[in-house]
Structure formats: C-alpha cells, structure tokens
Image (cartoon, rainbow, N blue to C red; front, side, top):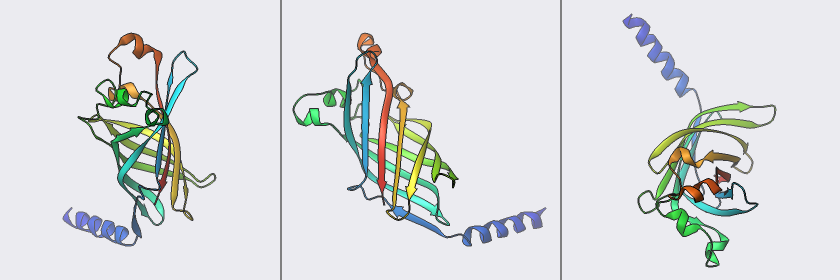
Length: 185
C-alpha cells in the first residue's frame, strides 16, 4: 500500500511540474464592473460602477484554472450620485451593502470548463458580499490577444442579505443585480 501511495505522489508531482502554470495580475485601472439595478413594477433603473482593488487569474497550459478578485465596495458610484442625486449613499448604508462594515467583496474562481466551439468558459465561483459566501455560475469569453476576459451575469441580491429595511420599498426593487464585467490583465 505504501508503494502505491508513493507512486501516486510521484506521478502527481510529475504531472503538475510538466504543466505550464502562469499567474496574471489584474490591471485594475483598465478593468470595469458595471452594475444595474431595476424596479419590479416601474420602467426605471439605476446604473453605476464599482472598482476592483486587486486580482489574479491562473492558467495551466494556457487554460484558465482559477483566480481571485477583491472588489472595493467603497467605490460604488453612478452618474446620478456624481450629479448630487441618486441612490448611492443608500446603497452604501446598512440597508444594502453596509460598506462601513463590509468594505470589500471577493470572487474566487473554483472551477472552469472550456467550450472550444464558441470560446466560452463556464465558470463556477464563490462570491462573498457582506461576509456571506454563495456559489455563482457565469459564462465568460477570453481574448488571449488582448489579455481580456468579459462576462455578463446577474445575482439575486437577497442571497447575500442585500435587502431594504422597509418591506414596501423592498418589494418594489427587483431582486436581480446585473453585472457587466471586463477583466484586463
């Protein structure tokens, strides 16, 4: 049994060392996270941005295998806020993201499946917001020439406890938050 275990360890080590692993640093200045929140019964929405603090993407033999990203929740903004109106201060307070207590969010890639026929990556990840970690799934497209990864996905904000303290207002806000993300490495 000991010989089988030693053989397994050696083979595993040879397999790992035979692969070409690279880690790419996220260019936070060129990467974007655009968000959109809507109302349930109104034809109205709010759009804005939030910025990455840092991130890395790992590849093995030029295939994405993992990554981790830190999002600076204190950077939540939108044009309305910059114009002196809009919901950003409310999004930052304890009703929604409680940024003073939870200034960072995290996304850790846990699994990637590549579909060569349409250059799509099915990515499973753990998203942590307000110290609550939930699994998410999204599809992304990688462009190796530009070192860019793009995706669009939505989450149900209530899974992370992002809820309004007023039930009437809570029911008027869609549970979905849409993200349009460009990662530049």
